[in-house]
Structure formats: structure tokens, C-alpha cells
Length: 144
Ligand SMILES: [Zn+2]
Image 1 (cartoon, helix red, strand yellow):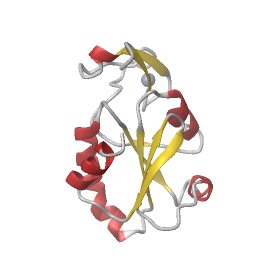
Image 2 (cartoon, helix red, strand yellow):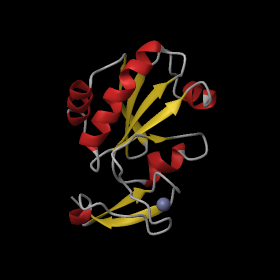
Image 3 (cartoon, protein in one colour):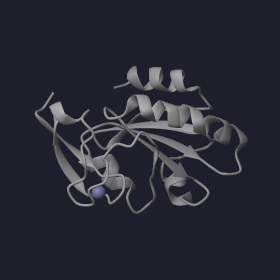
């Protein structure tokens, strides 16, 4: 593992350089001074999606969901729980495909919820269907 990692702030989208050894010590963003990891999924939009996928050095797990989707709502607390376990090794994010229809189309999301894992700027794995927290964590750990 390299000595430092680029971490994109979930609040202001600034790119921070964090020593790898300090990743688990609650690092703060140098720009907005908020926590770079708060144990909650962040919201990705067309405006910040590409930056988080390509500029950060940690994998990004994305839940493509929509407010009208029952299984998505059922999975939300499970996904949030998984975020608490996967951070800070993985950035955990959500895309509301009802608002961000362009992103849903760009990635060919045909059913929701769909989980997609991005690494080094590209998608490396995808899993449609709702999952429990333990299964989400296990699935991600098997791919990174
Ligand atoms: Zn920030």
C-alpha cells in the first residue's frame, strides 16, 4: 500500500492527501474541516460523480436507488450499516436515479437497487437486487 492516499471529501468534494496510516484516525478535510468519513453513505450527483470515482484512491461503492422503489427503502438501513463497516477502506455512496437519470442511463442501470463498485476510475463489479449489510460487506471485500 502507498504511504498516502487521495481522499475526496464527501461534503465539499476537495481532494485531500491522507497518510495511509492515519486513514482510520478520523481524518478531517483540509478545506471544509468536516470528517472525511462519517460512517454514512454520501450523495453522488452528475456534478461530483466523476471526481469521486476517478480522483480518490479508495474504491467507491455506489447504490443506484430511487425513492419509489420498495426494496431500495428496505435496503437503505442495511446499506448505511455496511458503510460504517467498510469505511475508511471504501467510499460508500448513493445515486438517486430519479433525480440523476443521466447517471442511471450512463451506467445502463436496468433495475434498482443495483450496487456497483468502482476502482481506479472504472466499474469493476455490479450486483442487482437488495442485500443485507453482511452480504454487502462480504460482496465488496471479495472484489477489492
Ligand atoms: Zn471538505
